[in-house]
Length: 213
Ligand SMILES: [Zn+2]
Image (cartoon, rainbow, N blue to C red; front, top):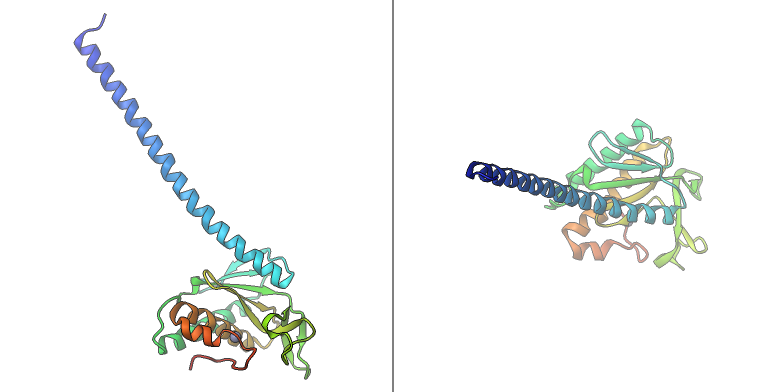
């Protein structure tokens, strides 16, 4: 037996269930989209991490952020002085970039710094100079070439997101700030002045840092 009232009631119930299903579907869809974004960001970081590990031969198992928000991956937990030196280098980079009227990628969180194990702690003249050995590449046959590899204070490993590698320091943290500023110059130029970036990205034919005055 179905009265009019009963039918209307059933209709209302069906409508409610339909709306609930729609709501659940919408929620699941939103969740799926969020997950896609998360996976994408994660995948991007995995690619950069893989490249950093390939270049240095290190495994970066420590993840921290500086006080000002830069991302740091390291082999061993960096000291607070090391992190402050990174922030100082980025501050110097942003100041000189603004002076040159560049405005893109001037946030601490835009940068990821990999701190690798040094492959040497002293340069050829005996001065404290933690550097990393990297494949000679375009530096093959130049004065930098050590026989297939070169010693570098720092090296850009990814342009977007912006990431570079430096070596662990336990003193002379002014040097860390300088390296951060210098590697950052290549990245700021990449995102703000592509022609100047192309003209200065490679030091094998001369030209060094600072690029921005
Ligand atoms: Zn450089």
